[in-house]
Length: 468
Ligand SMILES: Cc1ncc(COP(=O)(O)O)c(C=O)c1O
Image 1 (tube, rainbow, N blue to C red):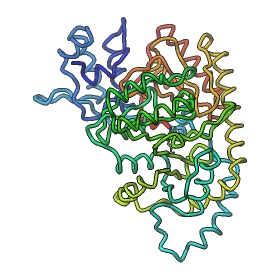
Image 2 (cartoon, protein in one colour):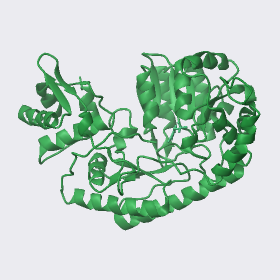
Image 3 (cartoon, helix red, strand yellow):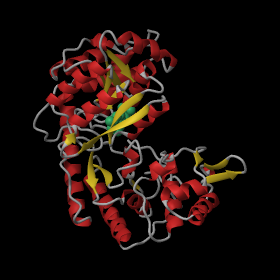
């Protein structure tokens, strides 16, 4: 049986400096969160057999990792992955000149300061109250519900629970409806932290493919639901992160109908749903087609720093959500909710500003690809956060390592997969200012050329990082 490490190594191949290359790859998996600190790694003999390499090569790779503090070997308990905490260099955006493409999010919307000042008056009216609100401020829930109605899904404010961002919404949803030990269908690729949240709550992830041009393979998705009868399916149906694809209405309707028969709860992440550049059509939210829990957020239209999101549930689902929440937290901050109210009062302006910034970012990525990575095509990106680039071969992790040497943080494609595949792809955000993107693409081109010239990246300065 394939080991978890073997699976995560996916399409890794090397013909020269094999031990060093393998050690680099394992270190990357570890720092990237795909192998966890403390996890037991296969024995030298087992890994050698699995990868078709000599035992001496594997022993050398483990030695290199041990020298760097990335594995611990103890007699009797084998080889375990480790993190050399004090030695890890954490390149952050704050580090001199580092560009962080692990983040796909625009900076705060220009109206945020003014909205915050206006929100103070609204907050003043709440100061005498206890301040705890499990489902959120009514004026905010009213505005969120009104937007669903505009998008074709009549919604009562009582069906909304305000949360502290979409990831927190996911935590609450999984606390209420997660089923440890059961299958959860996820897109491949998908948003890494949602995959981690599903894993952490004991779900067995079952992938279904999504690609930029073609989107979902509807038959695969339906067949998987029927075959696995999963407890949950986690979907990003609009401007999917990272591919930018949107699921057609017909596919939504069909999927909702099948999910009903297989008893699968559809959890649809709408964090990116309003990030339209030029899609040319607007589908109804998933719950218009059948039962689905919707998750939304202010993070991408206003600011990630606000930490405001929400869940839209059916009236039947609501009590379970509200019962699960208090063991996690007792409500979201009121000032941020007041700011969200102010911003949603002029949603059109908010969305227009986000759209303009994404359009400029998309152009900068397309220009950068043409100039610095000729032959790597720009995919269709009608909206969303990123371009999902097909590198034409399994080079994403190596490219990511080489990019780090040049002050560019780029999450490797497999970070977006539930099973360590997708090394042919890289996600490039379209959210950064065009000047930053232009410099990032120049560095990426430099890394690309070095890689193709056969240079080995210096992976000693790797660091773990979040991907948003
Ligand atoms: C699909 C998706 N869900 C959730 C999030 C996180 O959202 P929040 O900041 O509201 O927790 C992101 C951020 O990139 C995302 O792309």
